[in-house]
Image 1 (tube, helix red, strand yellow):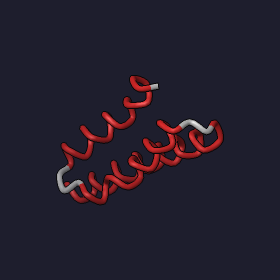
Image 2: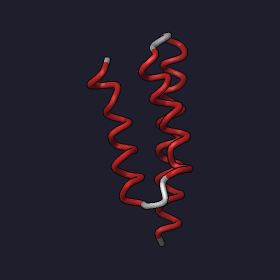
Image 3: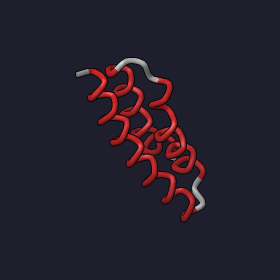
Length: 67
């Protein structure tokens, strides 16, 4: 069950990351651009479902606080 959860959450975060990436590229905004890159690459390095969700939610909230 954990493998299925990891895969589904990874796809969700990667989809959100592609949205951030395309927005950052079109608007020439650095923070959303690099947040998008981080969102679709970090699931490869997360071995635990809980950490995947925590880091993913933190990355999604990052542009709100930095920009």
